[in-house]
Length: 248
Image 1 (cartoon, rainbow, N blue to C red):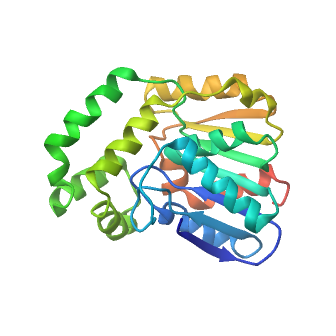
Image 2 (image 1 turned 180 degrees about the vertical axis):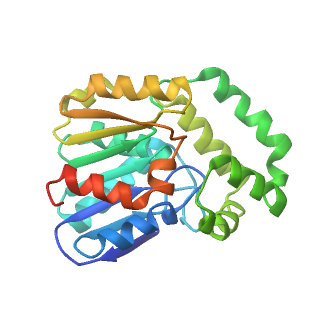
């Protein structure tokens, strides 16, 4: 597993997991800000550009990241955060180990399975995957995703490196993911964030997570679409994170 690191070599470790189809640069701006005082760890999730491994499931990614935390950070981190697929993997990590972190930020995590969508992913990508490497198509997708303009070169470079098999695998896993009741045992303080303009199923997922996690709060970002909170507003993300952990 490829890991990008920023900041100080100390015990205040912040691990942030990027969204599906993106990469570590999803959180680059946050890492640059947090790196002044924290050790920021940005893994490249399996199945993504230069990760070194195919995508074998959300649970497998969670296990691999827990192994990294065990081997390098003494079994726990200060903050665990994630966006979309990254948030699902973070939720899975919390399910597997209740004390893996002291604080968590779960942004736009789908935890209610969508079997119809899952069934359509394979045929849809079979017909359109060849367009991924076309710059005009990448620009269209980039605009649809509402990513920050300075991230286009990163997005185009890394998206073109994702194989059809891996892209299909992580998209299907994401639409099939379901929150586990064992999350009720989580000991972390958790912020659940969802955009006010996201799809209804995403808002329902956020509410379900809030019901499962005993020490959590749900924040609905007014006017925000999927992923905009961390990708477009890194200063706000960092400010909110510091306030949550009492370091503001």
